[in-house]
Length: 499
Image (cartoon, rainbow, N blue to C red):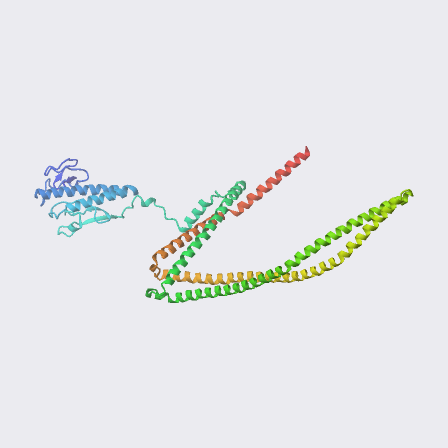
């Protein structure tokens, strides 16, 4: 068996380095068409073998590219997935280079297999000796080859084999909750429940404090978002006469009715407040008048009270002197000392004088006490009037407080309805793309709503993280810690008692 030269189709000895006819350098991969010994030693040079040098150069380029393609195809079959990707890219580059240089060739030129299209094909010669074109433009030539192809699927890139599937929204949320909670892994046995309980208890306290702060911030941001939306509604309501806001006519009517109700409630509250203020002013004047009338009576009462006190003081002093004189007389009489009659007479005269003064003071006290009693009755009458006026004033104040509270409730309800109408107007305008008439207020409302939504998400994530611990393990660890502490204390007390 002998080999043939792929260029001139001449017979070549096995193992020869070059063709003897055309000088083509032979390799094990380029030798084709083994023949038997009875074939003639030499064949006539096929058409195109002695072609022009430009055509021969083109044939050499084509054969070189074909040999490279076959070697690379063999490596694709036996290499791994990662090498297949790089080799496929190299084959496509070679194929593009050959395609850019190939031109239609003569029918007699021998061709080698190549890679065509987007799929990798290993081409083999059929039993015919026709040439094999390398690209689609040559497939339609009259001397086109009869080939057998082995199709391979397009290789995967190296990166696709290692790309993990994307996480779902629930998986991302669960991972965020776990990283935020920082409770650690759940206990795998009963002995790990105690440290788990301590860890969760301390961390949960921190999370609850953070949750309280987030709730406060969220309320403030919700208020800001509500104010921004109401501000947008007020600006749109100011444009109610603009023809471009005609689709908002129904919402304008709702806002107008709510605004009218606010005005009615405020007017009613102001009227009731004015009436109560008038009543309070009247009572204040009457109380002041009564106080003015009772003021001289109080002054007169003070004077009479001072005189009465002075007279009573004198009477009390004289009574003391009378008791002293009587005591001395009693002492002298008891001693039966009859040598001091002058002293006894002097003490009796002193006693009688003091008794007379007492009677005189009592006579002065009687009309004074009567005047003082009448004056006090008059003062009591005036004080009763003043007390009634003050009670009435207190009742009016309580009624005024109740009216103000009712006014705040009714006005607050009307204002809430008005703000709700403004929010509905702003929301409808945003959905109907009419809020762009107020770009600044619309952007502010959108930004405030986004901040509120994000703050809600953060708060909900914090709340979920706070409650993401294992309740059963938490309780088990708590019971075990408390029970162990109690048992240790009991054993300790028992040991002390035994000693």
